Image 1 (cartoon, rainbow, N blue to C red):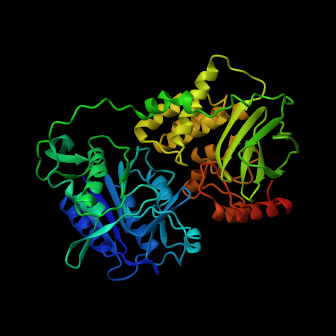
Image 2: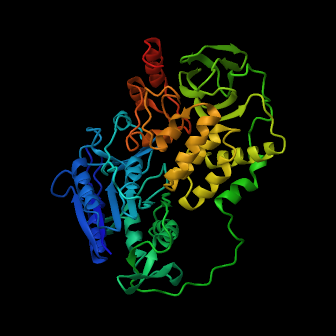
Image 3: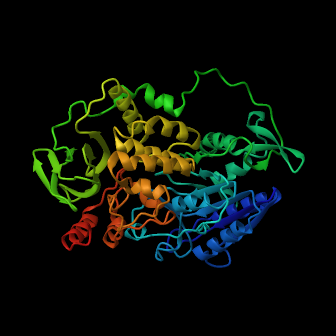
Length: 534
């Protein structure tokens, strides 16, 4: 079994405060991985700057070799989150906007390497971007573009983060003049004396190994990091987060000494994600009970916006009229793009779908949810099912993102895709769920059927289906991803958007659905007036 790792430690990024434990943590982890049989490339700024091209070169060398069964990418340094993109800052960032690693897009490219197991480990802050310089960081992809002749090997991507989104990752003094990231320290410690419940037995090259699986490591770190901070008297909040796609046979290292675990206290069985969200779904659903369908022309479409006053509408390739809270859009044979401006200057771009009406809910100037329903159809007994599924989606996105685990994704997608004709956004969420588990065949299947349901394609669905959507596609709407996290797939899936939209994309707000700040909307409106957007 051949395994490889690229270990990155960046003490100083631009003018940001130097991190005392970044290099030490990277070096310790690299040595441990080497002891576990990994071929390790170390990239730290102890001798000189760490660049995106150096990281790309190191990763590409392992990918192109075509002989590795596992690849680990570890980073210790400064990081931040902006919208649905996450960035690890290299030596030249943030002044050089390209000298950062875009994590989300790199994960997407990692799925196409043919390496069965790819593991990302981040000991970096996940605080929100605040400075103007951070807002302009674009970052670089550090995995190579896939070759069309690559194998169809299913790639499982596991991700370990030192903290949850919005939290900082802390480093503590390990000894005199010696620092260590608390997350990296706990990760290494997990293999020293794990409990027997964490250990799995696997066969490697004919030998039996006792290992700590990535799944067990995830559960261990959830408790170990907060406990370690409390024991040291550090009153900060840092809660590790992990997304594990692999099964119990995938691991990073062997258990050195196994101890017998104490008998756990009895507790009620935990509900799965799907059970938990559907259990209380009808009570929490803020659906369309008070927004009954209104009469439309057979091929017409309407929006109703709640939570904000619409100050301007720009319907591309069609006409519209406004009557009270309803916006009537004259779409006939295929979806069209509609640019909505809200009071306060923010706004969004949504697809107008023939024979549907949409409900747009806005909170604090940001689009929180969008649902569609056919304008001339009722569903009797299926209404309750539709509302349950919409409720499940709402619960899953209440944090402002749509993320579920690989284990839950396929079951969730199968439940909601059957109602995609009733509400096309369910098909949209199904596609993102399939993307979370790397199931391209099912994404393509959903895309195929949605073409007939809505007489065209949604940008996000075409993007995730690998169709490389762009401005020249007449059956495509809107001209940008409708979910904010879709923007993180643009480069890795080779989608294109109009130049004006690309400029406006630098002004995305933190919202589930694509929402532009007043600066971004000004760019789009000017482009509409000049005829640059269609």
